[in-house]
Structure formats: structure tokens, C-alpha cells
View 1 (cartoon, rainbow, N blue to C red):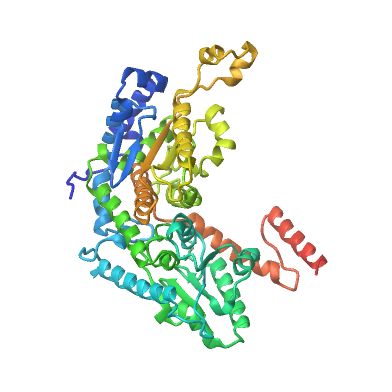
View 2 (cartoon, rainbow, N blue to C red; view 1 turned 180 degrees about the horizontal axis):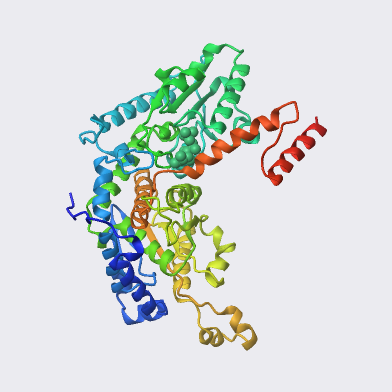
Length: 553
Ligand code: G6Q
């Protein structure tokens, strides 16, 4: 266990010594070009790299010097990063606004570990649920678990939203290569009825299992979809209420609501309030993932998560992947003023990874007050976005190369294809390397002219370069590597949240939406004209909707 001391009283971020030093330093280095940095230090591309748990990180194409790195690490230390890491792993209630521990790391702790929350060993609870999930997954996969009419289950539909959907969808897509191809997996999240209708299109209710995934079991979208699914299932199975037990299971922290819905709590897979929704894909929320890839692959994924956890907890900051990437993102965000980060996986199976990261990063660190409730005076989470390469290259990369904004990029690539075909993989990887090179070094007017470009066209073909990127290389996308990648970004978020001194684990912005919609629903559904008491815009929109609806009925 690392032993850096907790700073007695944490200064506000902009008053910290390292922050001020970084400001002075930024004025000195902001004009430096990556072209020069690489010429001055021919070994830079080998030096500014780090490797852990099978992930290789090249961060040399960031606009940094050795001094920048040193100051960023000073900032992490001055911000009490190590003590806060230790506090998380210990199970301290660091989610102060919800008075909860933050223990997604316990979800992948080995059996022999022990972490106490309110006197209970949560690792024991985790493994109990994992075993129950494995038992159930095996029964469904083998056909031992039968539907109401005696047929085996061939279709699994996960119903959930936000943290109870994005992880399962992403993991299913990412690990499709390892999935049971004889089964169909679908996901319903949106309260838009189209989502449900399309998800069950062509499915036979007698062969379909619904997993209702909801931490609270009260979320409007999920409960609406779950009731619709119940009706669909019952209708297809002759209306026998007993069939629900064979076609519905729940993943939740709320046993009372699960029972109220009619699901036998014996078929409920539990998780706990110390697992945040967006940190839950490796909890029971991953039941659909486990059924798809099997318990062994699921455990391999957990092992990957755990390896990255251990790296984050114990590695010195200068070699610590999540710490380095978190700090570099802060450098780009708070000093260069970059407002977004593009995540660009060159692996088709990771097509939902950027969408998954949007919730993880932005719901966690899209905050405007510090832990003490004071308004922040600096930018917090950048906007994360992205698409798999090379598709993005034929679309928005134009702006990344030649637009007026600086968009730091995370490129993610693998040395081995899961579906090798001829020269495809070399071509794919050539594109990754070419992009990072072009972004960093660009093309000068002299180079463009030397290609015989007429003078009037030269400015259009110039690439300024100096655009920062990280490259993450791994051997191949396996369940274990996926676990490592997700844990890497979880801990990047943690690192950033600690420096910004915000609570990365609450989501009051999401709660507000949940409450407001509940107020408006009766105003849309009531027979009598409701007395609307919103602002004039909202009142008008509601009235218009009611009129249009009436007209078409
Ligand atoms: C995640 C958020 C949010 C949550 C959904 C679904 O961190 O809290 O995205 O996961 O609102 O909530 P339930 O799982 O309770 O239905």
C-alpha cells in the first residue's frame, strides 16, 4: 500500500503551488511545437510511454515537456490523490453528497480479499452474487432453464437505462466475438415505444427471457418498458401469470419493488448502493454479458479490471496509466482550453465504447461545485465523444486536423485482429499511426509547395499540426483487456475528479429530469384540460401537443 501523506488542508485548486507553477510553465511552453520537441529529443517517442497490465500507452504526442509532467505529478500529490485512492479502496464514504462508499473496485476483488462497509465484508457478498449469476447463466446457456412452455431460452432482452444499459450494450458488442451465437441478445432502454417494438421484433415469447435491470427499480423508462414486456410476454404465453417467473429476472438493489412487480426475489440478482450506475457493468448489471460470454469469460473480464485497479492503487504516478492520462487531460482541458476529447477505437467491436465513456466521464465529472459546495473557477469535465476508426476519418477528422479547435484524441488499437482477413489489419493499423503522425506534425507551407501545389491552394492544404493525442496499444480485444480498458477510464475519471475536487459519484442532474417528467405526464394524459403552471413556452408546448394528439385520435 502506498503511503503518501494526506495534505492537512487542501487549498482550492487554483491556489495550489503546483497549479500556479503550471500556469507560469504554460505561458513558457504553449508555443512549442511537437515538431521541435521530437527533433530536440530523438528518443521522446520511446521515453514518453508507459506500460501496465498489457496496455501500452504512448503519450509522447502531447504538448508537454519533462517539466510539465513533473509539475502535473506535483499537482496530483498536492491534491491528495494517493490518500484519496486509498480511501476509495478502503471503502470510506467518499461520495459525500449521498453518504456512500464508492466500491466498484470491490466488484472485481479476488475471493480472498476483504473490504468492510458498515461492518459487512462486501467482497463476500460480491462473490455470492457472482456464483448465483454463474449458476443461472450456465442453466440458461445449456438449455436447462426452460421457459413456461418447456422450450429453452434463445433470446435475452435486457431492459434498463443509463448505467443499467450502456455498460451491458457496450460489453455485449465489445465481446460479441466470444458470445453464444445460437442466442440473440437485445437491449431496450428508451421509453420511446419503438425501442421495445424493434427489440422484440421476430422473437418468440416462449423462448424469450427479460432481465429487468434497475438499481432503484423505480426508473420511469425501465418500469414502463418492463410492464410492456410483461404484457407482451403474457399475451404470447396465454396469459398465465405463473409464466412471469420463467421469463423475468431482475437485477436490483430494491427487493421490495422487485417483488411488487411480480418477480420472485429468488430470481433477483443483487447489487448495492456503493456501486454507482455508471460503474456497474461488472456487477449483476452484467448478467446479460455473462449469459452471452459465459461465466469464465466474465471472470476473465473481472480479472482484467482488478489488474488495472492494482496498477492504479500501487504504481508510482509517473508510470501510472490512469494518473498520467487523467493529468494530461487536465493539462489539455484547463490550460490549453480544449473542450472535448475524442475517443477513437480502431476496433469495430468497440463501436459503443465512446457512448459508454460519455456517461462514465461526463456524468461523473460534469460538476460545477467542489466537494464543499463552492463554485469552481476552472473547467471540469471535457465533452467525450468518438466513433470507431477508420469511419471517423471520412467524416469529422477534418475538423480535428484543420479546424480552429484543439481536440485531444485517444487512439485505441490492437496488434491482432479478432477476424483476420488478408491485409485488412495492417491497413487499419497504418491508419492509426498515420493519423497520430499527421495530427502531431502536420504539413508546413514549404512541404505543401514542394509537392507542386499552386500558391493559391497552399493555405488550404497546410496542416498546422501540434494536435495532441494518446495511443493505447494492446495485443487483442479479449474480455480481460476490455476490463482493463474500462477500469483505466474509471480511474482517469477518478484522478480528474480528485484534482478538480468534485464529487465524481453523484448525479443530481439526472435526478432532476426524473422528477420533472413525472410532473408533466398527468398534464399530457388527463381528459380534462389541465391548469398549466409552467413558463409560457412549456405551457404552450404542452397545449399544442394535446391539441395535435386530439386531432389524430
Ligand atoms: C448512473 C446514473 C443513471 C442510472 C439510470 C438508471 O450512474 O445514476 O444513469 O444508471 O438512471 O437507474 P436505475 O438503475 O436505478 O434504473
